[in-house]
Amino acid sequence: MPLVKPPSAPVERVLCTVSNLKSQKSFGRWDTYNLAVTDRRMILAQLTSEMVKKAAEDTQRKAKAEEKGFFGGWAAQMGAGINYAQRHMGMEPESILRENAGNFAVDNSNVYTIRIRQEDEDSKEYEFEIETGACKHSHIIDGYPESTDALKQIIGERVKASGKGFTIRL
Image 1 (cartoon, one colour):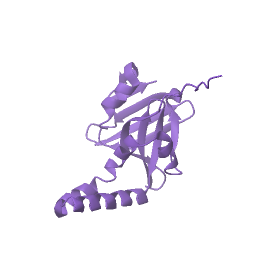
Image 2: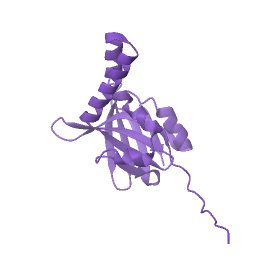
Image 3: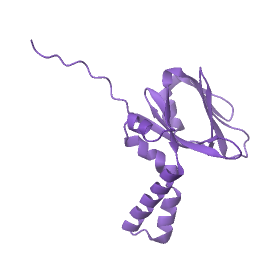
């Protein structure tokens, strides 16, 4: 009797990222997350100070090897935390979840809405809120997320305009 291979499950991959979502803890303290969006779920990956420090050191080392000079190295180092989310683009979703004890995922099927809105037109900060049947995950982002178009493509026709931002209805 020939061996029959079971059909393999589709490979889950990261389709886009949103960097530096800040979530207020208490007394002016914040947790920072990067959001990795797959076709199946949204992974909130906590960004620790140790991770940012290591990314800055790696970036500085790379800039030195490329002989970018003082200002080139400084500019690269300043963007290390912001660009950390791009690292998730090449990672397996399960690896992202295991990267840190503070990481967690929300299945796309459990998400009711995603809202990105500006509180007032003078502010450079945007509220980024993921609402599920169980809870709301509210974050602040410095500036309008560059991945908005990618989010719209992943979600499709469920994107609805909403004031100074947009709402994605799932």
